[in-house]
Amino acid sequence: MRISDEQIAEIIEKNDIADVISDYIKLDRKSGGFLGLCPFHKEKTPSFHVHDGKQIFKCFGCGKGGNVIHFIMLAEGLDYVKSLEFLADRAGIEIKRQSNDSEYAKIDALKSNVLSLNKNAARFFYDSLKKSDRALLYLKDRGLTPDTVKKFGLGYAQENWSSLTDYFVSSGVPKDILVKAGLSSRSEKKERYYDRFRDRLMFPIFDVLGNVIAFGGRRISSDESQPKYINSAETPVYTKGKHLYGLNFARKSNNRRVIIVEGYMDCIALHQKGINWAVASLGTALTVNQAKLLKKYFDEVIIAYDSDAAGKEATIRGMDILSSNGFRVKVFRLKGAKDADEYLRKHSAEDFVKQLESSLTLIEYKISLVAEEWSLEKNDTRAEFLKRVTKVLASIDSVVEREMYINWVSEKYHIPKEPLKEQVDVVKSGGSFSLDKNSFRRINVSKVNSGVSDTGTTEISSAEYKKLDKNEKYLLVLLSEDSSCLKKFGQDVLYLIKIEKNKLLLNKMIDNASSGKKNGYEFLLNNCDLGDADVLSGVIEKFIMPQDTVKACKEIMDRLNKNSIAEQKNEILLRLKDKNLSNEERDLLLKKLNQLLMSNK
Image 1 (cartoon, rainbow, N blue to C red):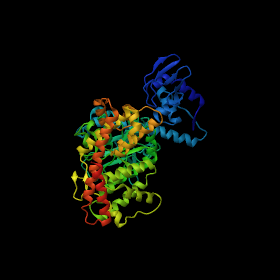
Image 2: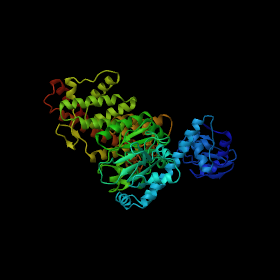
Image 3: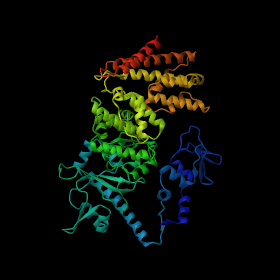
Image 4: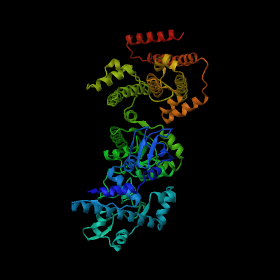
């Protein structure tokens, strides 16, 4: 099955490249064509050229270029044939495919028929909704506006057995086609046809081009003998695990990250609140095909599934699939509601997005689940916690990332870094995890409290963390604005900074400077996440370059060093209370304590 060269030429001819691209970006007329900001990479100075005479585009910033078909492939994330279909539909051209195989022609005709039936079924359900007070009341109670209902094409499947089937049959549609489309079912005993969806709120499922390919139906009656949801069976146009609900809208959000929720209502509620980069996975088991589809439009995925056992397992599977397909993956654990729909009926979109910033990475999430399952208070479960965490850390391929997470686990769970790293390296190289008696004593973990925990370890409070973060970020801004100070103190500051994200920012600054590039606070803002940007912008707003930058750097470094010494002293004093310490271990701790006291004089 192919489209003829003549029709391809017609499609290109009737889709002027400047007109098409103007649907996506603002173009200004320049000599020889048009100029605009490239839609495929971030830039402040326009470098995207459109030559209407030659009907081509070229970006001299990122290098992308081609004709109108190539542009649609890039902008819409479609393959070549789908891009042709997209442009043909835009120009009102009916595609005539060439085929020497009559079987392929029959399949193609069936697909067209099913899509047409789905479109008409969606209209039928939408019209039926207007006549159902019960369905309208249900939507009102769920907080959906008429505009949202219309945008998502929500409808209602009537209560009687064959209203939709009768509607189509009266229009001359064969019953067997309705069955193939997944709209009707056939009773073998009574040899009659009836509607697949009855007395249900209907959710049309769209492909990325906006075609109705399937339906989901939610029970709105109190009859719990019926399943809560019924979805379309597989048809010539719909295959389970290959589509995502709401993606037809989310792909146009101009956002490179996407949040995946479980249900239709969660997705719709997010869009209604302006969070238009949300999709639903049509079942909790995210597939490789869905990951590949998302990759056409997004770089970062946040999974927000339910927190029950099934949801946790689905989250882990989904995160692994997404990670292996090149995404930055995080998981969102919503507080204050069981799902996004419930939360957004009580809170603002801003509150929701603010919570999103606390999303966990794949490794953080896996380790948090281990901590939930294996208590840190008892020796037997503590050992299992360490064993499982070591396995998670050893699964990280990147040396830099593995080191970063070893530091994170060490800080968060109060585990000395060296014994932990030693075990991770053993497991990474194919060995088995083991803890001898002495090394086990050195590992002190505790419940998360402020001050001193009942297991004898210190915790940093939220206020202390914010103060430390602000001091470290002030030092980063100072170093970013003075290259000589960065060169002089950069490596020393690396050892003083405690917060890993700040350490990563400093490493990026050092690498950037070694390449001969300028830093500045703009560099920091461009390389931090949204949460850090809030703190940095506050520091930058009040920042005044000191007259003596060397003196200012030394003062902050001295402050950070004293804080570090105080923390180490407190930790040693607490560990000295352990009655199980050997004489050798006690002597080493006392020696270290003496060194710290001398260095602080």
